[in-house]
Figure 1: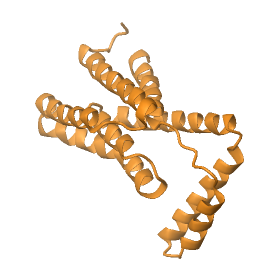
Figure 2 (figure 1 turned 90 degrees about the vertical axis):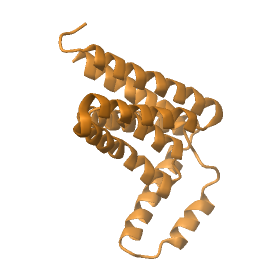
Figure 3 (figure 1 turned 180 degrees about the vertical axis):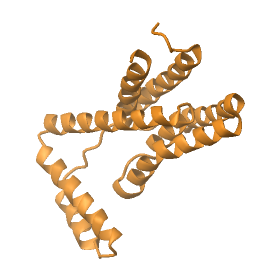
Length: 186
């Protein structure tokens, strides 16, 4: 074991990897990440952070929860992402430090992009997916500026034959594993 790795770090990463693996399997099988998995992980992580770090430990855990969940909450609200993904990311945040959370967020995002592109290529719909991403981003920007976007959004929905989705729990698991490897080995 490289110097600087503590039993506490191994335990924390073990919990996060184990739960994200279960979430990935659930997401693959049912396209859902159950609350029975995410809520206890969140609560135990926050209690543990408070127990080990006091008020400052709890504050860091809550901040990391928000940091990891916010992009997924926005995806849920504006782009049809899953609420379970947001809850899982918040729960993972309860177990990590802010620096680790930032790395997880970057690795999960990269893994999600790779999985989405791979699925689009396999379905021969990469052009449609890239067009949809552009229309979604454009619509979001217009809505921030207060412009009407209903016609553009409705036209994009009408032009899209079938929605291309991925079980994002798999991307979360992959991103967590990559980050744990980086954190523990370097």
